[in-house]
Image (tube, rainbow over all chains, first blue to last red; front, side, top):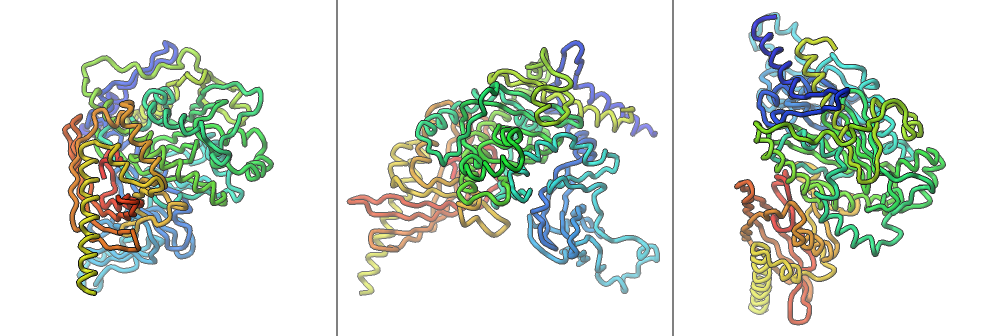
Length: 457
Length: 172
């Protein structure tokens, strides 16, 4: 190890200590600098986003041969393609010749991608099929021995149509990485009779001037809802006073205890959920009683019950899947310590009725994104936090302790119902809003930085 | 005959200009009760999303829009949310200037005017002293309602759709 890499490792160890996690002393503190420091930001891109599994899209986005979609993993532009013979590949979207972005489009279908700069061409399997004027190029013999294909990502995998990729081969198998978060993806996917989900056309992209971890935390935060979204709740209450049966409201079975809970998992993931007698919004699955019955027959009454409960799933480091009044898939791309780009899709089970689909779309527009009546308040709130985090000399914030006194280990009544194993769980009244479900993400954040610094696991 | 239709065309243009410029002023001055009263109760207010680099969504029933309201009620809810002083997006509310030009208008049916225009909305957020510009195209449909004209449909094609932080009726 040379001096520069020793210094880098020492710096990473120093950064990893910005999380103070002492479970036996019931201490969990996050230094404000992790939201503002450019060194921390660079370390996150390189050693977190570019070193672990990231969600890169749905297989149904590239359903047909030669379909493609572009995205990012950390800073790296990524081109996802289905080859002519039907195999999905994910590649660095950069020409082997001079590094030019090979595909500048969001999505489409093309057999070939030709670099606009000097005309090098690739097929939809990533294979180089032309080096322009190679014969007259006076290349040294070593050139023709080199591979000129697009560089594939180190790992590519899919769980029931959710595609994940890693730029590093030093990752656990995807099944192990996802663990029992898969049960929560299943609760959405199995709302479709054919077990397929799709993005409703019309993705939106927005930015906020704050650190990506504000979104990571907020997606797991039920504590903020009543305060931050009080203006939205007022609207919902007025609407709900006149809601008809096609609004999709459903009821919990008799005897269920109301409350809010969470499960934490390995590799940074967590899910929040709530059990409520009075819903604030209907469910697309709830507006069609015949279909709901059919789903219940197929998946059983326990899982059908969970399909109607609000669930906010975070798969670290870049994915949140929400199933409430609609379903949303959102990913973030960190652009700077204080700037984040969000891409948001409306997620839907294939095969729902036209009326349920339209309700899903209206509900999604109502709540989510920079134009929605709830997410827009979150976005501004992140910016308020980012400004506040500039008080770097202040003590760490006190935002990670709700639920710490009663955090659960091993099985719970709810985990047994779902047949899952969580590393930690929490449960409390509907006003609970636990914060222990932020901990797994920060523990994985620290583990990845320590791993990059060469520390044993 | 030609002279008569030329006069009608000028009338349609003058009616459309008066309405669209008034709408812009009311949005910029925050006179939202007067603004929303310019719409019919069954008005459609639609900001399509973008499917790719060139194509906007065309069917709000099967595709996601940036904003879609099929009645004035949706706009009234948005106004109530801002005026409740509970929405953090309005604390403080950005200042805006709507600039509208390239107006074309024609009588598309008896008592109905269809018009196209382009807009730039300068948005300044005093909270963070940042500003941005939203720009795009408007398509208005106006309907005569007794002595006055109401907006029955407004389609806003937002050209720069990577939205910074918040998008609401006042910023487009």
